[in-house]
Image (cartoon, rainbow, N blue to C red):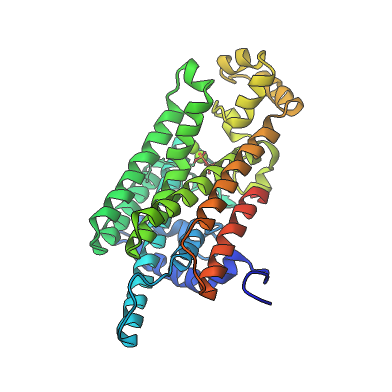
Length: 348
Ligand code: FPP
Ligand code: MG
Ligand code: MG
């Protein structure tokens, strides 16, 4: 079979590098102070590393953009530069995963979460205080790793991501009545909370490869749209999944009084839902009432449709990349396209 027919699992294409990264992460998060070490390594242990969605995307993006900028004259020089670039791009995957886990540790404190990745969340196991400190520690290790890349534009991109994560979390926590009903507000928050990290780290992968601003923008747009689709489906699964299928609580958004896309779409169909939303889901009967409206509306379906539009935009970004005849490049681009489908059909 040729490269464009062969079925492939996006994750298996980068599985070797994923395990290299997993091992490196475990060594990068070793702390001097025993309790901090114990807290920081918690979600990097074998078996609780999660879906590794972000590193997978980033490693595939690195391969998808593997287009020589200028023709090498000496083969040996080219291959050592190529290896150096591979390592630097792997660092981006590691840094991204560290920032992500740091944000989860803080998020579980803010959300009073009890489970994460199918085990007790760190705030439950070691308490809020150590969780916050462990998050800070991971963030600082990510900063050091970032500085070592000696690329100020990339440092700036990922520093902006951290600001965006904090923006998103704060926007979610502090809404006016008007903002709670606003799809625009929800989408902006979703970009900050989820899409910015993957968008900007995809861009960083392109910049490290010395790609043009145009290609870097395509990488960014792929990440942004994939991230938006990912979070929209996450917000659907919060209503349709079970705690055991998700490895974390279900119906957690509405119980925490967070209004997401399915409810916003349902509200367009059933304006009566607005009063319920305004009351703030403080009692169980309002949660049940909102769920009644939601399940008779097209809210979940329309959220999936919006996610599908973002997934299509992500595919278009990949299709717009400069042509390549390299089989590995073609395979990796196909895997990135396949990932958009997996995001749409995932159940956890
Ligand atoms: C999960 O959301 C949370 C995030 C994606 C971002 C959290 C960001 C912060 C706490 C800001 C601080 C950031 C850093 C880097 C220290 P969720 O609660 O909707 O998802 P869940 O169901 O997985 O908990
Ligand atoms: Mg949470
Ligand atoms: Mg949260």
